[in-house]
Length: 606
Image 1: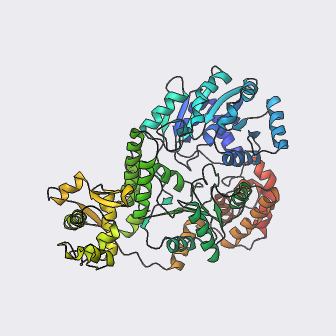
Image 2: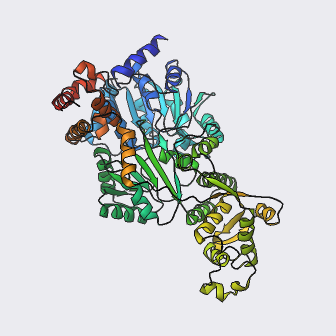
Image 3: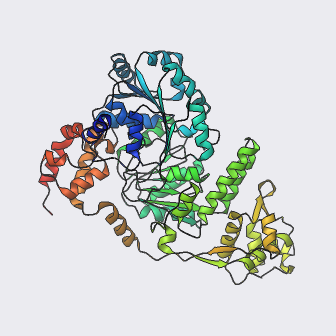
């Protein structure tokens, strides 16, 4: 082990309170300490930030962290300051006193990490200031934003490579992101680096996350039922519209859930207040559009629910990745329906992006639909998208509940025959009515009760036919024309099945297991708490909340859930013993150790 890496190991324990690196971190830290330019693709929750924070305090000079996310800057500065690290940010939300503190530390060359937004970095006065601040490393977070192929392209990122050269001719550069496919990685390397960087692509597997998809029935009720399985736990519910965000927050509040809304249409003061409450208080559920979550450094989010289908696999992966960042078990659920598919396809087709970009976005959406209708382990399907293979995970709905496939060639032919015989002019509900023999007013109006296909699908319920239509759409056999009232038409691939030259298998809709809410709560609690003394854990959380509120910081800045669980499990009897608990560094031991030790010693022995 090199001397620099040995120093990093010591700081990992003394500053952050960690006993060792997470998988994939040590090699990256070593490369940075060796002075190499680095591109790191690491999933959310795998500890990307440590890969630049640790080198920043292990060697002299200033590390500039570029991020578009003010929330991330604020959260990481709080956490680093609590650990005794000289860190600061320059952004529009700072109080004048905070900006004054940061500028003083910069002038004195005592600051180790400075967080800035790309727009702020592009200002001539910022570049001039940094040229005199002994900057050694520029770490660019959310680096996919530089790529036109990334799922969140931001033009202001394009100047970062040039700015890096202006700040220092030999400035070391590090780019990090949670999701980037091959074209995106190539784009990042070309635009941010003068020469090919050392590239690390870490596994996208997050085994602590349970993956589940459900077709929409009554989505609000489904969301409420899912949230109720996580009493007093922090979670996020993502919605596709601002209206739904507010409606779901109200519905959850009526059910006794501490729920708050978040979307770009709310007044900024309301958004900030709701975000601070979510950060600082246990058990808050945030209903939000995707405007919420990026850069929210809250490790104890226990669940993420998508009330509507995400935009693509990358967006889905990033959004569910905001759960369980502490490595403890977390739950995810994604609801989807035909309306979601229509909306996402329409958004792509009506966008003003070039045709090549639309083609890529169609492929990404189709990959997400394939994940939703997957016939095998969801983790296998998800990891395959990112070029990885795995064994069945045992921690997704399909592994736990099972899935059955059947030869659906006849059913597909019946559905597509109904589409063709009605002139490819009608939507799904009308076609389902024809197949099931339901003489609705529209069926009578168009004389479709006289078609040969009328009633040929009576052996299946309407819900089963809707599932068949969704799967046929997901597999590309049928499509909808969104500009003509959502009419269905048969694709070239569909005609192959309709003519009998190809066969098709689909998933059989399975009845959901009848697990009581009490059983689900007990199972979830046992996964997270383990052998911890539950009464002591509650007392420790109460102390943490009191301290966090007094300091006006998120609860995890004091101690993470994992730290409290270990304290309640091992019940250390001295400050020295407490020092061996995960997340208890020297600064936190000195600041909080005595208070937590008093609670532990005052608690009845198990």
